[in-house]
Image (cartoon, rainbow, N blue to C red):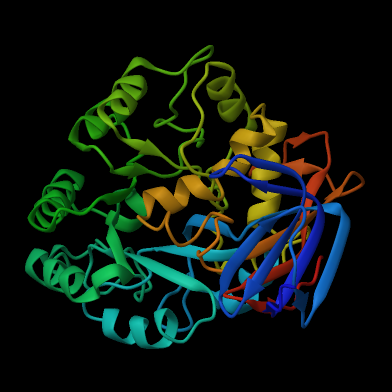
Length: 380
């Protein structure tokens, strides 16, 4: 007789794990902060058992681009309040901290948040702490300080964030920003999380030529001078960048997700590598609330298969972050990060940043587990 006592057992009518190929009714057992068993039948008892016969259980969702911060970032929001209860258990910060405020960010967010937070360190030493653009003053782009901070950060710092839009750069030459970003990244062998220029002075084709294997272009479905499609298909330079190993991330945000661009790209066979929210302060209190389940639902509405969309909020971003053996999966021995979603066919319309709607329902969060800990989840 098996005397195993689990801390938590969750039974779900559908359990999906893109990394292991699981898709069907199943049970996940948790002991401490680890997943210890996944399957239809196993022996043992549990201190707590939860049943979701009509819902979807996934690995904890992984958001490749958002703004988790508790202080020091004009975009930051507390991840334990605004992300974790909505199904996101791991999140990458897009440049909320730079070299000068990285130690404080590590203390207040990386080390103290229940949410698993990783940082794309801002190339600017000040991060997003100033009222103006982070690259308006060229003196704030200190390559040596950036390199030292990344080396100090260890696993907590994934790479370097560099956005060369006019909003962040002001009158600073975007080519010089790129030169310094690549100088830092090449010295320490880390990737860039890259936001493009969106101005005719630096065409997208030229920007993509600067990028390297493993660099991530975010805001990939924006609709401006840097759109990745023409009227009918994805442009050649984007395909060449993908062949080179450049990755593409959604980065929805307030201005960077347009259904017509996404639909053209997806119909052409160009799927994003990762789906992310770019969730930040202006989204707080939005109705419906902007979150990762709603964002992945929009990609399904734009033509992605459910299987492709679910992989891009679980195992695929985990792989990009170098965390595939720990998060984004239900494999036994990995972190007990779980998200339970419920399909709402009567939700408010799925809209892009212009308000253009698409029909269809939406996945909504109803339960989150982070490292074995149940998280209160409120659907709004």
